[in-house]
Image 1 (cartoon, rainbow, N blue to C red):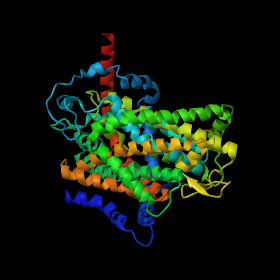
Image 2 (image 1 turned 180 degrees about the vertical axis):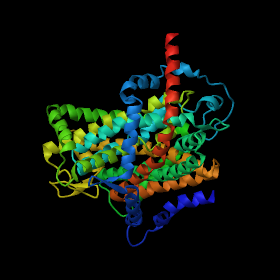
Image 3 (image 1 turned 135 degrees about the horizontal axis):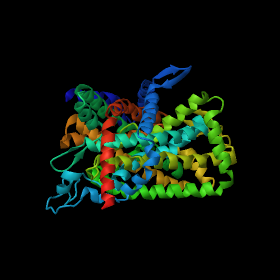
Image 4 (image 1 turned 90 degrees about the horizontal axis):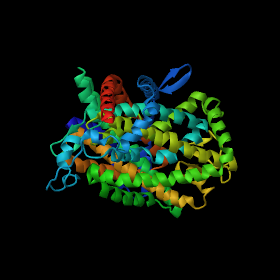
Length: 540
């Protein structure tokens, strides 16, 4: 236990202490100066490349792409063939198969569980298919779709969009596999609280396959990295971009501005995460449809306003995918940018979403697997593509920036000579067609960031509990550290945060994908069982 604790804290404590510095430089600068060296080292370590045909390709992306492609072929393109089944499952068409029925109970609220549900949860889980999907989508549909797409296009040109879409399509198969396993190997506590995710299917699943030692090592590795990812991509990146947008909209400046905004965000996040998965699910199922609806509606308005250029835009996307702009490192460079940004956005292969999906009320693991495959489609194929089109239209009309001419995840705006990146570039694109939309976008960004942070707090907490036990003291320590990273992210620069965040999310691919490649036959068994029972149900 002590060794596990030291392993985690060694990663984060060296720069946490600097959050208390307030003299000489501004506190924002001090936090960023401390954060950057670690972020650079961690990024270079995780993105260690291997040379293939003269190209340096990160090993983690090779594992991600080959694994997703294999699952897509093995399960006969489930993202297409099982799409109608996924829609029917999430809307509750087959709920009667689970014979849900909540027994009356006089128990009080326990660790965020609602009165009257605990008896039922001990058998079936904690949340509905829709709530599980909303919670997981809230962890993926977010600033990766707004800021991440802008970074991808700035670095890789329009062609990066094509490879993001490809990553999303094959990622649907990976999500199907990992979320099915998440439900199959979950653990249910005596009070009905569900504990699930890669930590459990790696340890339990591989143990059942006679590989107990490997399963335990991979599970611990995943849990440690997931805690880090919850602090990075699921937290610091979100608070960073929300803070940037707030400061831009309100024309705020000053050494401690980021910290002040971060503290406010931390307080709001803290209020929700105290409630547990039920509270998180109840919030995300309301926030996600609303904010996604606003963002999609604005995107469609701009797309239809530029409908005569839609052919040209897609032409640039396809052409750029295979004949990239000069200076982008060739076609492989564009593929790497596209897949890296899409992986950060939809997290397929990282296994994080399986933690939320594990809490679903069902006795059919594959039912949640088919629901989960909707995530990469919603996140990457639909929303990321919409964002990309808006930015491409913006640049076609204004010639605002040169593709591939990005520095530290920021692109030079030709008219002003200023470098902007992430959410600022996306905001400019939307505001160019819908004047004043930056104010609405600011609200959407804050909601995106907020929902992503509370979802990732659950992912990280589940991993923390796996490492250190399920006591209240362990919970409190994790939540304090998580809220501290809200402040750190708000104070650091985008470049430092995005390096750390990318690497943390991608690092999860190593233990998770290795486990999936051993356990996928169990998914086939569960899938056949679910389909068989559906056929029998339909015949009645």
